[in-house]
Image (cartoon, rainbow, N blue to C red; front, side, top):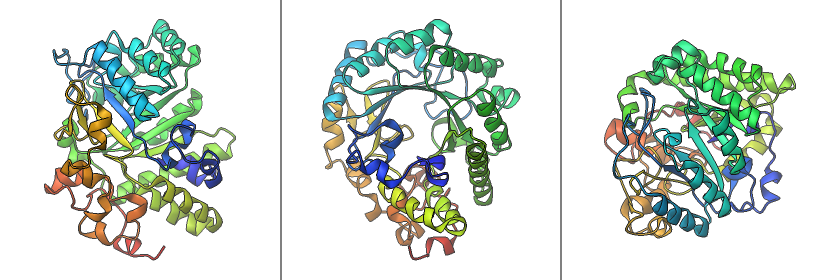
Length: 395
């Protein structure tokens, strides 16, 4: 996760994270990416069921629920373990988390146990009453997925009317006083919608937007050919930076992040090095704190059936099941071959990643994307768009 607004527009300084000691339990949510202890943010896919049919769904969500979902009691036991382990945030996802009737009860229990609870949703099921309930339980944030304006989004989501329903969900969250933001997955099909998304967050006064690079997992694994090429990725990131700066200079600052491609960090730094060398030095310090991709270390995932994964895209590889052992034990067991290596993956990456000057900044980017294309977990990430000259620099 790369905070474009934090880095490029200077809304965060290195001293901001240092002031809290860089410990996850003490850091406010907007500084968590700079934590030193890397207690994992946990994505819990509470259900596989969903009311939409998104073409890029990493969870292979389906219309009907399965019979293997964790029960409410098992979920509460999990939450207690996460809290005792020091997990700062639980992100309830799916499928569509709001199809699960006990979602408010589980989210409230996470808050009661001292964690921040957020949800990732398509927004179509958030009516005024649901928004009020989510506000009352102390939900910190609602991330609503939109992948373009109405025509593009509804084709991408597989259901006509999804865009209009999501906008109603956003408005209902705003009316209830819940912080709400957008999630947008970039690909060739919708990259031309980025400017429209910025107009939308400006017009609707939406404070946050996350732009996700495509990860080849779940139904998204079929979209490898629909990912941006390297030049298109650079142009997309430049466009995101430019719009972020435009709104900042206009007095309408938004929190803008890019997710799932840690080449974005060096790219922002290199651009600033030409435009504002002093700020570039500060950004370098923040990037060092961020430490790049944290799959298997600073982020983890638990599936609806209790399986534990390095992140939400590693569903084909489980470290164990929380029905057999607590998450805290599974996550700390470095004798598990892949988990142990992911916690220090700079030692194992190959090719241009192994010799890249940004390795400690990016941490080798997305291993699951490398595996999807090459069959080798430790091969270079094919989505890294930095040139050979850029990765050979001395920093």
